[in-house]
Every structure is written in C-alpha cells, then in structure tokens.
Length: 140
Length: 126
Ligand code: HEM
Image (spheres, chains in turn brown, blue):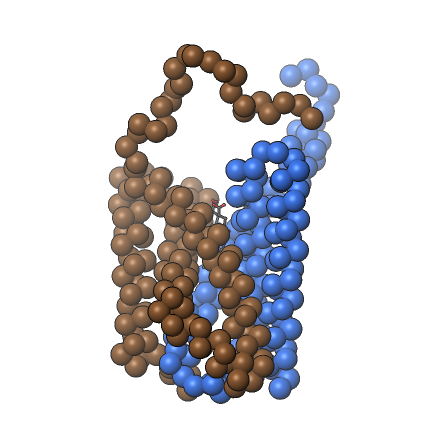
C-alpha cells in the first residue's frame, strides 16, 4: 500500500487555513449535527428492533420493554431519538433542496439553520407534551 | 487531452469509487421515501404513547400498518447503511480498520433488518 498522502510530513511551516481559530458558523453546527443524528438514529434502529421483538412476544414482552423505556434514562433515550428524527427529517429535506440547487444563499442558509435547530427542539418538546397531556394514545 | 476515449467511456469507468453515482443516488431515493414514512412513524408512535400492552400488538396486526412498518424499517436501514459507509470513508484511513468496520456495519444492518421483519411478520400472523 502506498503511504497515506494525507499524512503530514513533519514541518515547521505554519499551517493554513487555521481551522481551529475560525468562528463556528451556524451552518457548520447544523452539518455535524446531521451526521450525529444520523449515527444516533442508526443505533436507534436497534431499539426499534428490540421494541418490535418485545411486542411479538405478547403482553409480557411489551411489559419487559416498557419496564426499561419508562425509566428516566429510558425516557431520555426516547426523547433523544425523537429530537434526532425531527432534526434529521427537517435538515434532510434541506439537504435534498440543496441537491436540487436551491437554498445556497448565505443569509438564507444561516437563517434556516437557526430555524431548524430551534424548531426541532420545539417540535420534539411539543410531541412529548402532547403525549404527557393525554393527547397521544389515539390508536387505542 | 489527446485521448481517444469518448466521454461516455470515461464515465463508464465510474471514477475512483468504481460504482459511479449509484451510492449517492440510492441515498437520495431512500431519503425521499423516508419523508412520508417518518411522518407515518411519528403518527403511529404518538398514537401508541401511553397505551397498554395490547394496543401496539393490535395496531401492527393490521396489514397496512405491518406493511408500512416493514417499509419504514427497510428504507431506514438501507439509508443508514449507505450513510454509515460515508462516515467510515471520511474518518477511517487504514485499510484494515476500514474493511473491518464496513463488514461490521453490513452484517449489523442485515441482522437488525431481518430481526425487525421477522418480528413484524410474527405479530401480523398472530
Ligand atoms: C426522516 C427522513 C430522513 C431524511 C429526509 C434523511 C435525509 C438524509 C440525507 C439527505 C442525508 C445525506 C446528507 C449528506 O449529503 O451529507 C442523510 C444522511 C444520513 N442519514 Fe438520513 N434521512 C432520514 C432518516 C434517517 C434515518 C431514520 C436514519 C437512521 C436509521 C438516518 C441515518 C443517516 C445517516 C447515518 C446518514 C449519514 C450522515 C453523514 O454522512 O454525515 N437517516 N440523511
């Protein structure tokens, strides 16, 4: 195998650009968050599998799942996955718009970055609030 | 420059990935499919929140719900498989670790998908 071309040769010359000294634009934050939520949701798929298997095991299976998911830590995980899906969904649609060539104007991209960050938290909290105030469970 | 190769032939070589734009395209197709499927999934999860042990079972016994849950699982995991490959490609630069992680992802995705589908069928046929 050839040497890794990206491996820097020991050098005393200053590096440019100095990535670490740039102010973080909000678009960088939304970009890495898309990746983080994508990986998080992939792990969440294992929980989805576990949930489906527990349901297929009948009432006791369902109870064994909820004995864990209804704990504070379980609820935190469920909230994390809810927010991740909402965020990844909203930002994913923006990604698709970019792929079609829309939405690259700097001010627009910065504005909807903030909207997606704040909006995803608001929607995730609203979904939990709906469930807690008894507005969920309509499939009963 | 002075190549006798036609542009089409160059394209058929499909670049350094050897698979052309297939990966990119499948990632977009699965993303588009996941938009309605996630809305349905969210509707289902909120509708099951706070219900007792039989509601989810009965819900998934309905053929449409079983099919939609199956579709959500397949598209999510296919999409996640493609996405996780990109993450590994970006951060892992040694051949050994890369092959190991790619295979781990591949086997895990297949195992999780198969488990979900088996459970869905088991629920649906009672
Ligand atoms: C809700 C609908 C969804 C949409 C619209 C969507 C959209 C996207 C798009 C457009 C990308 C590519 C981003 C890029 O070009 O860098 C992406 C990446 C990714 N998605 Fe999704 N996605 C959705 C749901 C999911 C789900 C359910 C999972 C996990 C089970 C997931 C896991 C991932 C992963 C791991 C990546 C790779 C992240 C990266 O390369 O940085 N996505 N998604």
